[in-house]
Length: 281
Ligand code: KIV
Image: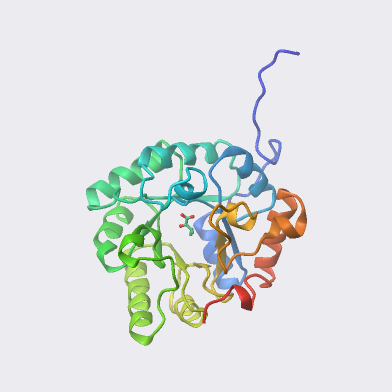
């Protein structure tokens, strides 16, 4: 009938799809198959991302910068993360969806559990991501013992920008590299099931990837991690502050958003992205 409500379906049009789970990602790591990850914050982009066959969607607190126009990720609230996660989940059918725990929402294990509960129960996320190493171990143990799947985040941690002073490569030098490796092993022992490594030298990222049993996803961390993640707006060239050196503008090369996403998936799977010019030494 003409006035029938529009029923939103995902990219599959209602067909049966095999969902990506943490077991799928563990199997991919064991088989040496690269894992594809991208950020997404809304329904329309999520539909295109899923159509491209992306394994994992990260509802990153980078939305504070690319969607909201803040200078950093710090102002993002838990309610905003829940809102964007729910927008993504409304159309997501196959990808595993991770939601970021924003700044000052995980200061104590109890606060972190409240935040994770909202992201999973109201937002629908499958996993939460938390920045930090040794100081987060107690919190990670608290969450994972209560059936909250957790992804760690080491290297450049954007929530620490005012301590760091600038967004720059981390882990250069033996001492720093050893500390990040130790944090990575500690997080895995505490129960994280995945790890994001941001802006670290490629050799360090490779060493950490080999040392861990869980999937390690890199951004600005070279080609030898188990998978890659990029901020969606960066790989489409929609940037307000210039494109970071570790990003490739796939939209400029491909012409449409759908083709750009498919080209990214293919480039990660075939290890043609990241190339040397996107890599820190
Ligand atoms: O918030 C985010 O988008 C992230 C990625 C940069 C990994 O944490």
